[in-house]
Image (cartoon, rainbow, N blue to C red):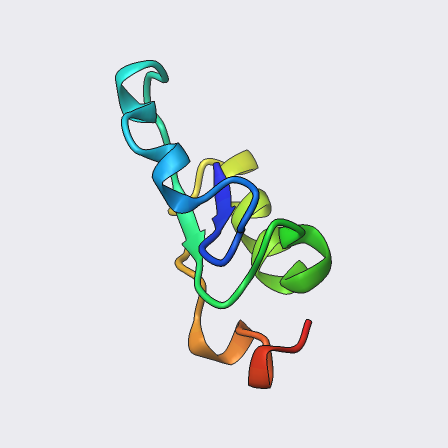
Length: 72
């Protein structure tokens, strides 16, 4: 699961406890990203999805991939 930490509609707290219901959960938070993770951080999302689909370690959202100045 990939979640934007700045999502005001579905806050980060919405994810708390998900591991109780989903076996083998992989959860990555994207700092500085809102609800639209695919549009705001496509490089990070694509890298995470590719890793997960190929059974590789799912990377964290790196500082180099964060939006600059709050922009998408």
